[in-house]
Length: 338
Image (tube, rainbow, N blue to C red):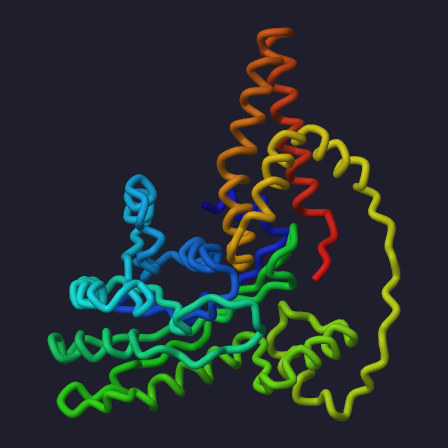
Protein backbone atom coordinates (compact mmCIF):
# COMPACT_ATOMS: atom_id res chain seq x y z
CA UNK A 1 0.00 0.00 0.00
CA UNK A 2 2.79 2.42 0.90
CA UNK A 3 4.63 1.77 -2.36
CA UNK A 4 1.44 2.42 -4.32
CA UNK A 5 0.83 5.68 -2.44
CA UNK A 6 4.46 6.70 -3.04
CA UNK A 7 3.89 6.57 -6.81
CA UNK A 8 0.37 8.03 -6.60
CA UNK A 9 1.29 11.19 -4.69
CA UNK A 10 3.91 13.82 -5.32
CA UNK A 11 4.22 14.40 -1.58
CA UNK A 12 2.60 12.99 1.58
CA UNK A 13 3.03 15.13 4.70
CA UNK A 14 1.92 13.91 8.13
CA UNK A 15 1.46 16.11 11.20
CA UNK A 16 0.38 15.48 14.79
CA UNK A 17 1.30 11.81 15.11
CA UNK A 18 2.25 12.59 18.70
CA UNK A 19 -1.47 13.12 19.37
CA UNK A 20 -2.23 9.43 18.78
CA UNK A 21 -2.36 7.46 22.06
CA UNK A 22 0.08 4.56 21.86
CA UNK A 23 -2.29 2.30 23.81
CA UNK A 24 -6.00 2.02 24.43
CA UNK A 25 -9.22 2.04 22.44
CA UNK A 26 -9.28 4.58 19.62
CA UNK A 27 -11.74 5.71 17.00
CA UNK A 28 -10.10 7.53 14.10
CA UNK A 29 -12.57 9.91 12.43
CA UNK A 30 -11.55 11.77 9.29
CA UNK A 31 -13.12 13.79 6.50
CA UNK A 32 -13.86 11.87 3.31
CA UNK A 33 -13.01 13.48 -0.05
CA UNK A 34 -11.08 10.79 -1.92
CA UNK A 35 -12.93 7.45 -1.65
CA UNK A 36 -10.73 4.44 -0.81
CA UNK A 37 -7.55 6.55 -0.82
CA UNK A 38 -8.66 8.22 2.44
CA UNK A 39 -9.05 4.80 4.05
CA UNK A 40 -5.57 3.72 2.95
CA UNK A 41 -3.78 6.92 3.98
CA UNK A 42 -4.74 6.67 7.66
CA UNK A 43 -3.37 3.19 8.51
CA UNK A 44 -0.23 3.74 6.42
CA UNK A 45 0.63 6.94 8.32
CA UNK A 46 0.28 5.65 11.88
CA UNK A 47 1.32 2.52 13.76
CA UNK A 48 -1.98 1.54 15.42
CA UNK A 49 -3.73 -1.72 14.56
CA UNK A 50 -6.88 -0.46 12.83
CA UNK A 51 -10.14 -1.86 11.48
CA UNK A 52 -12.21 0.10 8.98
CA UNK A 53 -15.92 0.50 8.50
CA UNK A 54 -16.45 0.33 4.73
CA UNK A 55 -19.67 0.59 2.76
CA UNK A 56 -21.11 -2.88 2.16
CA UNK A 57 -21.52 -2.43 -1.59
CA UNK A 58 -17.73 -2.80 -1.95
CA UNK A 59 -18.00 -6.41 -0.71
CA UNK A 60 -20.39 -7.69 -3.40
CA UNK A 61 -17.72 -9.53 -5.41
CA UNK A 62 -16.42 -12.64 -3.63
CA UNK A 63 -12.66 -12.33 -4.18
CA UNK A 64 -12.80 -8.55 -3.59
CA UNK A 65 -14.62 -9.19 -0.31
CA UNK A 66 -11.85 -11.54 0.84
CA UNK A 67 -9.18 -8.99 -0.04
CA UNK A 68 -11.00 -6.21 1.83
CA UNK A 69 -11.55 -8.39 4.90
CA UNK A 70 -7.85 -9.33 4.89
CA UNK A 71 -7.16 -5.59 5.17
CA UNK A 72 -9.28 -5.38 8.36
CA UNK A 73 -12.22 -3.82 6.52
CA UNK A 74 -15.71 -4.37 7.95
CA UNK A 75 -18.86 -3.93 5.80
CA UNK A 76 -21.39 -1.42 7.11
CA UNK A 77 -24.85 -1.17 5.58
CA UNK A 78 -26.72 2.00 4.69
CA UNK A 79 -30.40 2.72 4.06
CA UNK A 80 -29.75 2.72 0.32
CA UNK A 81 -28.59 -0.91 0.63
CA UNK A 82 -32.12 -1.87 1.73
CA UNK A 83 -33.88 -1.73 5.10
CA UNK A 84 -33.49 -5.47 5.63
CA UNK A 85 -29.72 -5.24 5.41
CA UNK A 86 -29.69 -2.60 8.17
CA UNK A 87 -30.23 -5.37 10.73
CA UNK A 88 -26.77 -6.68 9.85
CA UNK A 89 -25.29 -3.50 11.34
CA UNK A 90 -26.10 -4.81 14.83
CA UNK A 91 -23.53 -7.55 14.22
CA UNK A 92 -21.09 -4.94 12.88
CA UNK A 93 -21.55 -2.77 15.98
CA UNK A 94 -21.00 -5.78 18.25
CA UNK A 95 -17.78 -6.56 16.35
CA UNK A 96 -16.62 -2.95 16.78
CA UNK A 97 -17.38 -3.07 20.50
CA UNK A 98 -15.15 -6.12 20.94
CA UNK A 99 -12.37 -4.52 18.87
CA UNK A 100 -12.43 -1.50 21.18
CA UNK A 101 -12.48 -3.80 24.22
CA UNK A 102 -9.21 -5.28 22.93
CA UNK A 103 -7.88 -1.68 22.90
CA UNK A 104 -7.43 -1.62 19.15
CA UNK A 105 -8.49 1.11 16.73
CA UNK A 106 -11.49 1.63 14.46
CA UNK A 107 -11.51 4.01 11.53
CA UNK A 108 -14.79 5.69 10.57
CA UNK A 109 -15.67 8.40 8.05
CA UNK A 110 -18.49 9.92 10.06
CA UNK A 111 -19.73 12.11 7.22
CA UNK A 112 -21.26 8.91 5.92
CA UNK A 113 -20.37 9.53 2.27
CA UNK A 114 -17.50 10.82 0.19
CA UNK A 115 -17.68 14.12 -1.68
CA UNK A 116 -15.43 16.63 -3.43
CA UNK A 117 -16.46 19.75 -1.52
CA UNK A 118 -13.88 21.34 0.73
CA UNK A 119 -16.12 21.37 3.77
CA UNK A 120 -17.29 19.10 6.57
CA UNK A 121 -20.84 17.93 6.01
CA UNK A 122 -23.06 16.99 9.01
CA UNK A 123 -21.78 13.88 10.77
CA UNK A 124 -23.77 10.67 11.10
CA UNK A 125 -24.40 9.19 14.55
CA UNK A 126 -23.01 5.71 13.91
CA UNK A 127 -19.70 6.30 15.69
CA UNK A 128 -21.55 7.68 18.74
CA UNK A 129 -23.81 4.62 18.87
CA UNK A 130 -20.73 2.38 18.85
CA UNK A 131 -19.26 4.38 21.74
CA UNK A 132 -22.54 4.17 23.68
CA UNK A 133 -22.82 0.41 23.13
CA UNK A 134 -19.21 -0.10 24.21
CA UNK A 135 -19.59 1.95 27.40
CA UNK A 136 -22.85 0.22 28.28
CA UNK A 137 -21.04 -3.11 28.09
CA UNK A 138 -17.63 -1.96 29.36
CA UNK A 139 -18.29 1.21 31.41
CA UNK A 140 -14.73 1.55 32.69
CA UNK A 141 -13.10 1.45 29.24
CA UNK A 142 -11.59 4.81 28.15
CA UNK A 143 -12.33 5.51 24.47
CA UNK A 144 -10.46 8.22 22.59
CA UNK A 145 -11.52 9.83 19.34
CA UNK A 146 -8.65 11.08 17.16
CA UNK A 147 -9.92 13.55 14.52
CA UNK A 148 -8.06 13.55 11.20
CA UNK A 149 -7.97 16.27 8.57
CA UNK A 150 -7.07 14.79 5.17
CA UNK A 151 -6.18 17.55 2.70
CA UNK A 152 -5.47 17.41 -1.05
CA UNK A 153 -4.16 20.11 -3.37
CA UNK A 154 -6.18 18.32 -6.09
CA UNK A 155 -8.74 15.56 -5.64
CA UNK A 156 -8.67 14.11 -9.14
CA UNK A 157 -5.43 15.01 -10.93
CA UNK A 158 -2.02 13.33 -10.96
CA UNK A 159 0.34 13.64 -9.18
CA UNK A 160 -1.38 15.51 -6.35
CA UNK A 161 -0.04 16.03 -2.83
CA UNK A 162 -1.73 15.38 0.49
CA UNK A 163 -1.32 16.49 4.09
CA UNK A 164 -2.73 14.50 7.01
CA UNK A 165 -3.29 16.26 10.33
CA UNK A 166 -3.94 14.14 13.43
CA UNK A 167 -5.74 16.29 15.98
CA UNK A 168 -5.68 16.15 19.77
CA UNK A 169 -7.50 13.09 21.17
CA UNK A 170 -11.02 13.59 22.52
CA UNK A 171 -12.07 11.45 25.50
CA UNK A 172 -15.45 10.18 24.32
CA UNK A 173 -16.50 9.06 27.83
CA UNK A 174 -17.11 12.66 28.93
CA UNK A 175 -19.66 13.22 26.16
CA UNK A 176 -21.65 9.98 26.37
CA UNK A 177 -23.70 9.04 29.42
CA UNK A 178 -24.09 5.27 29.22
CA UNK A 179 -26.85 5.16 31.87
CA UNK A 180 -28.94 8.09 30.60
CA UNK A 181 -27.83 8.71 27.01
CA UNK A 182 -28.81 11.57 24.74
CA UNK A 183 -29.67 9.58 21.62
CA UNK A 184 -29.34 12.68 19.43
CA UNK A 185 -25.62 12.74 20.37
CA UNK A 186 -25.46 16.48 19.66
CA UNK A 187 -22.62 17.23 22.06
CA UNK A 188 -20.18 14.62 20.80
CA UNK A 189 -20.99 15.10 17.09
CA UNK A 190 -20.50 18.85 17.45
CA UNK A 191 -17.19 18.32 19.26
CA UNK A 192 -15.85 16.03 16.54
CA UNK A 193 -17.24 18.16 13.72
CA UNK A 194 -15.54 21.29 15.08
CA UNK A 195 -12.24 19.40 15.40
CA UNK A 196 -12.46 18.30 11.75
CA UNK A 197 -13.31 21.84 10.61
CA UNK A 198 -10.09 22.99 12.28
CA UNK A 199 -7.93 20.31 10.63
CA UNK A 200 -9.13 20.76 7.04
CA UNK A 201 -10.46 23.63 4.96
CA UNK A 202 -14.12 24.18 5.80
CA UNK A 203 -16.25 26.48 3.63
CA UNK A 204 -19.34 27.01 5.78
CA UNK A 205 -21.29 29.02 3.21
CA UNK A 206 -22.62 26.23 1.00
CA UNK A 207 -24.86 28.58 -0.99
CA UNK A 208 -21.84 30.56 -2.25
CA UNK A 209 -19.38 27.66 -2.19
CA UNK A 210 -18.31 27.80 -5.86
CA UNK A 211 -17.75 31.55 -5.73
CA UNK A 212 -15.65 31.24 -2.58
CA UNK A 213 -13.48 28.51 -4.11
CA UNK A 214 -12.86 30.68 -7.19
CA UNK A 215 -11.74 33.56 -4.94
CA UNK A 216 -9.50 31.28 -2.87
CA UNK A 217 -7.76 29.90 -5.93
CA UNK A 218 -7.32 33.40 -7.33
CA UNK A 219 -5.44 34.15 -4.11
CA UNK A 220 -3.39 30.94 -4.54
CA UNK A 221 -4.76 29.23 -1.45
CA UNK A 222 -2.61 26.45 -0.04
CA UNK A 223 -5.09 23.60 0.43
CA UNK A 224 -2.43 21.56 2.20
CA UNK A 225 -2.29 24.09 5.07
CA UNK A 226 -5.81 24.07 6.56
CA UNK A 227 -5.02 26.67 9.22
CA UNK A 228 -3.94 29.34 6.74
CA UNK A 229 -6.67 28.30 4.28
CA UNK A 230 -9.39 28.73 6.93
CA UNK A 231 -7.97 32.13 7.88
CA UNK A 232 -8.10 33.14 4.24
CA UNK A 233 -11.78 32.15 4.03
CA UNK A 234 -12.56 34.28 7.10
CA UNK A 235 -10.80 37.30 5.61
CA UNK A 236 -12.18 37.03 2.06
CA UNK A 237 -14.46 40.04 2.47
CA UNK A 238 -11.52 42.29 3.33
CA UNK A 239 -9.00 40.67 0.99
CA UNK A 240 -8.52 41.84 -2.57
CA UNK A 241 -9.62 39.12 -4.97
CA UNK A 242 -7.56 40.31 -7.89
CA UNK A 243 -6.38 37.54 -10.14
CA UNK A 244 -2.80 36.47 -9.60
CA UNK A 245 -0.87 35.93 -12.83
CA UNK A 246 0.96 32.65 -12.39
CA UNK A 247 4.40 32.31 -13.84
CA UNK A 248 4.88 29.34 -16.12
CA UNK A 249 8.07 27.75 -14.86
CA UNK A 250 10.01 25.48 -17.17
CA UNK A 251 10.01 21.87 -16.06
CA UNK A 252 13.49 20.54 -16.80
CA UNK A 253 12.26 17.00 -16.23
CA UNK A 254 9.80 17.14 -19.15
CA UNK A 255 11.95 14.84 -21.38
CA UNK A 256 11.87 12.19 -18.66
CA UNK A 257 8.08 12.55 -18.42
CA UNK A 258 7.83 11.89 -22.17
CA UNK A 259 10.09 8.85 -21.90
CA UNK A 260 8.00 7.52 -19.01
CA UNK A 261 4.81 7.86 -21.06
CA UNK A 262 6.34 6.11 -24.07
CA UNK A 263 7.58 3.32 -21.81
CA UNK A 264 4.09 2.96 -20.28
CA UNK A 265 2.03 3.40 -23.43
CA UNK A 266 -0.16 0.30 -23.06
CA UNK A 267 -1.14 0.83 -19.37
CA UNK A 268 -1.80 4.50 -20.18
CA UNK A 269 -4.07 3.52 -23.08
CA UNK A 270 -5.99 1.22 -20.74
CA UNK A 271 -6.28 4.07 -18.21
CA UNK A 272 -7.50 6.38 -20.97
CA UNK A 273 -10.20 3.81 -21.77
CA UNK A 274 -11.23 3.25 -18.13
CA UNK A 275 -11.22 6.85 -16.85
CA UNK A 276 -14.30 8.13 -18.76
CA UNK A 277 -16.26 5.07 -17.61
CA UNK A 278 -15.82 5.81 -13.88
CA UNK A 279 -19.38 6.59 -12.79
CA UNK A 280 -18.46 8.23 -9.50
CA UNK A 281 -15.53 10.58 -10.20
CA UNK A 282 -14.53 10.58 -6.52
CA UNK A 283 -13.17 7.09 -7.25
CA UNK A 284 -10.77 8.44 -9.91
CA UNK A 285 -7.70 8.15 -7.68
CA UNK A 286 -8.88 4.79 -6.35
CA UNK A 287 -8.87 3.34 -9.88
CA UNK A 288 -5.56 5.08 -10.60
CA UNK A 289 -4.08 3.56 -7.43
CA UNK A 290 -5.31 0.10 -8.44
CA UNK A 291 -3.57 0.35 -11.82
CA UNK A 292 -0.37 1.71 -10.26
CA UNK A 293 -0.15 -1.28 -7.92
CA UNK A 294 -1.10 -3.96 -10.48
CA UNK A 295 -1.13 -3.19 -14.21
CA UNK A 296 1.92 -0.92 -14.43
CA UNK A 297 4.36 -3.21 -12.56
CA UNK A 298 3.00 -6.25 -14.40
CA UNK A 299 3.57 -4.51 -17.73
CA UNK A 300 7.15 -3.58 -16.79
CA UNK A 301 7.87 -7.16 -15.69
CA UNK A 302 6.54 -8.54 -18.99
CA UNK A 303 8.72 -6.11 -20.94
CA UNK A 304 11.68 -7.02 -18.73
CA UNK A 305 11.12 -10.72 -19.53
CA UNK A 306 10.95 -9.97 -23.27
CA UNK A 307 14.19 -7.96 -23.12
CA UNK A 308 15.83 -10.81 -21.18
CA UNK A 309 14.82 -13.31 -23.89
CA UNK A 310 16.12 -11.05 -26.68
CA UNK A 311 19.29 -9.81 -24.99
CA UNK A 312 20.52 -10.90 -21.53
CA UNK A 313 19.79 -10.55 -17.81
CA UNK A 314 22.05 -7.51 -17.39
CA UNK A 315 20.19 -5.39 -19.95
CA UNK A 316 16.84 -6.63 -18.61
CA UNK A 317 17.73 -5.48 -15.08
CA UNK A 318 18.95 -2.11 -16.40
CA UNK A 319 15.62 -1.68 -18.21
CA UNK A 320 13.58 -2.59 -15.10
CA UNK A 321 15.54 -0.18 -12.87
CA UNK A 322 15.22 2.55 -15.51
CA UNK A 323 11.44 2.05 -15.63
CA UNK A 324 11.22 2.40 -11.84
CA UNK A 325 13.41 5.52 -11.93
CA UNK A 326 11.28 7.10 -14.67
CA UNK A 327 8.17 6.39 -12.59
CA UNK A 328 9.68 8.08 -9.55
CA UNK A 329 10.79 11.13 -11.56
CA UNK A 330 7.32 11.49 -13.10
CA UNK A 331 5.46 11.14 -9.79
CA UNK A 332 7.71 13.58 -7.95
CA UNK A 333 8.39 16.28 -10.58
CA UNK A 334 5.26 16.63 -12.74
CA UNK A 335 3.07 19.65 -12.05
CA UNK A 336 -0.60 19.13 -11.23
CA UNK A 337 -3.50 21.47 -11.95
CA UNK A 338 -6.40 21.86 -9.54
